Length: 149
Figure 1 (tube, rainbow, N blue to C red):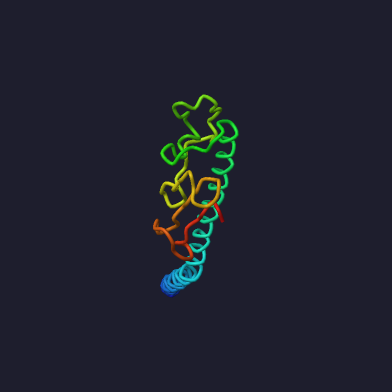
Figure 2: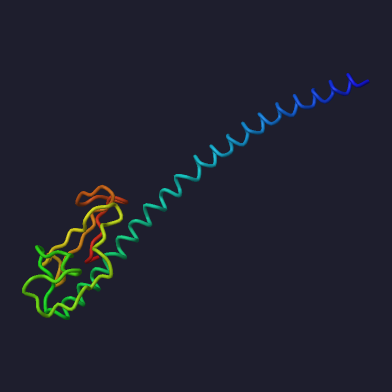
C-alpha cells in the first residue's frame, strides 16, 4: 500500500517537473515575442524625445542669448561661442551672467551645438544640432535641428 502511494507521488512530481519546463518555455517565448514587437516602438519614441530635447535646449539658449544681448548690446561672437553665457568674456564690462544655470550642455546625441554669430538667417545667431548622424542635412532622425525654424 505504501509502495503504491510512493509511486503515485513520484509520478506526480515527474509530471509537475515536465509541466514546469513547458511553462517556462511558453513564458520565455511570450517575453521574446513581446520584446520583438514592443521594443522597436519604444526605441522610436526615444528618438523623438531626443529631437524634442534638442529643440527645447535651443530655445533655452536663444532665451539666454537674448538676455546676454540686453546686458551687453550684442550677441557673443562665433569665437566666444555659447561659453560666453557661463563665463565673462574679456572686454565685456556690461556682462551680468551667468545666463545659464549649468555648464553648456551637449546635444542629446552627445555633440556640441554649432553656434554662429553673425548668423546667416537673420539678425540672431544660428544654433544647430546636426541630429543623430552628426552631419549637416539629413531626413527623419538625422535631420538638423535649427534655431531659425
